[in-house]
Image (cartoon, rainbow over all chains, first blue to last red; front, side, top):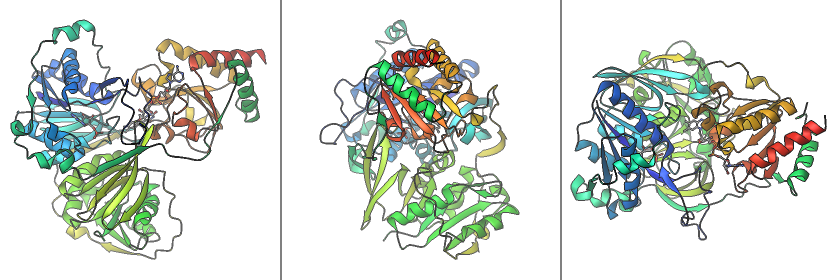
Length: 263
Length: 324
Ligand SMILES: Cc1cc2nc3c(=O)[nH]c(=O)nc-3n(C[C@H](O)[C@H](O)[C@H](O)COP(=O)(O)OP(=O)(O)OC[C@H]3O[C@@H](n4cnc5c(N)ncnc54)[C@H](O)[C@@H]3O)c2cc1C
Ligand SMILES: Nc1ncnc2c1ncn2[C@@H]1O[C@H](COP(=O)(O)O)[C@@H](O)[C@H]1O
């Protein structure tokens, strides 16, 4: 099975507090720690496990600036066989459809049986996978939390729907699946793993390599445009307790007792 | 004005989802005067009653009765919608696992703009629509603007718009089943596997001590266990804790976990994403402990403690034990 996994470099929400920069044109980027989007790690792990069982290879692809190379390399350290970076000034400011258009062009240059994305990017909206499938005209399933290879034409996939129930489907290959966290336990990548792939050449494809009209993607092609960032004023919010830990704990115990929170 | 306005009605076992009536209000926010058409797909006896019910809120209800639609397979429904909708349609869905499955691909096939997980509308000026979304689990909000003259697929977040309860639309059902067209797709529904049941039922508990990623390490779960024991409460959690296998799935609160209705909910190191808060019903007294004063959970909590939970929680536990 030839598998392509789409991975995105995002500010790591487990490591950072995301704040609006002064004028609202961006988030505060100074000192941000970036990492691979959490969901994409699960997708890469799943791809590696499928290939371990069924043979084939795993390729990871990312759209981004030169810094995105580090996430491609990290996923290769995890065990992906190949990496591709889609990078061009013209790609900057792409909306979901723009990203899907670029990823489709990359898919068309290969010969993949299965394409995986994350269910959601921390700064995204769970759209790229479904758009990519529609552009490729192949079946799609979102929030997938189990994959079973039936044969080289079919998979059995579980979608995690509301309430933690699982919707089982049979889906024809090639297809696009968006992967939900928890589907597996992504392996740890140590410094040695990173070193092993440190000098691997990662091809960088721009608009011409992909045969894409520059104005169909990026800011020029984006139909949905983010105007600004802001922090909504949602009224009162919580009563924030003050004082030392001891004082806050005492106050909280009073409140909890009053509400029946301490039995 | 842009094209005709539609709302897709999700339903299960003959019952419309809460979003069915929320979409009326959502659409009304940008089209105060437009007649919104409901789309109801399915198969069999339940469908007519449901369509009739929808006429209380929608002027027109398009019914599609077809064996291939017995289970809401987003792939088949996408084909149906592409077959029957005008290309410049403005279509509303709930942003749930069905809307996430369907919306992005539909927007490509209709060649219209996609607006996922919308939490509010700022307004429509001419063809230019401005909406509010959130990023990074609600840590920041954004305005997104787009031109919807060529149509739009708009997924609105469940639960943020009030349901329409006026019941005054006096609409009519139009049976469009014959227009469905070819619905063959490459994905076939097999069955639903029900969520596993655990040794505790957090849906029945009055007091929950809930841990999130802020607990940092598996060994620290013990801190929450000790607090819960002192309070006479039960431990629940957010999704990353289950993904990491630190606690069992039946303890997960949220849209893809359990819906709980406690009287008191103590959220330790939980940021307050909508998928988590979506599982918390019945207006409990919420206490949040989080070291980030700007964590979104403080906007919905009643009481907040801005502190490192690893330091604060043991102090709290000890004080409760002392008082007993
Ligand atoms: C389809 C779908 C369904 C989902 N369903 C669910 C669901 O059912 N339930 C669910 O919970 N999530 C669900 N999610 C995931 C959800 O989007 C969030 O990723 C998740 O809720 C975040 O969990 P969290 O708040 O524990 O972690 P984070 O968002 O990482 O927040 C951790 C918080 O802990 C704080 N913190 C860190 N260290 C400390 C410390 N030492 N002391 C105090 N505070 C600290 C941080 O400031 C932060 O606010 C779903 C996602 C998708 C796409
Ligand atoms: N810039 C990108 N490069 C590669 N893949 C991406 C990119 N943006 C989004 N994706 C993929 O699409 C998924 C969903 O992202 P989103 O639709 O932005 O929430 C991610 O988990 C990735 O798999």
